[in-house]
Image 1 (cartoon, rainbow, N blue to C red):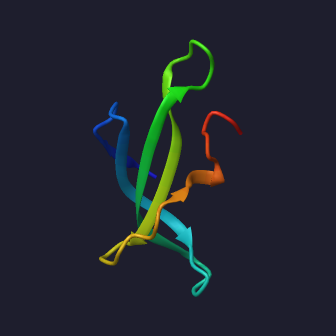
Image 2: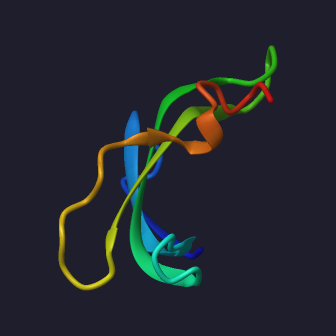
Length: 82
């Protein structure tokens, strides 16, 4: 997935791109539009570099259609902790 980010370094940033997701109907992969939202700047370790610690994603059909609601990336509330 190639993402183009807007306002990198701000408290919340949005990235746009395309992704492939499995289709239950066709049992193949479908190309979808994707938006990512990174926020909650913090540090993953004491004295470490600043990092976005929350990542959310939503998708929409490639040609038109509305985006889904925001969901946690990999169901993780904090990207610093696996």
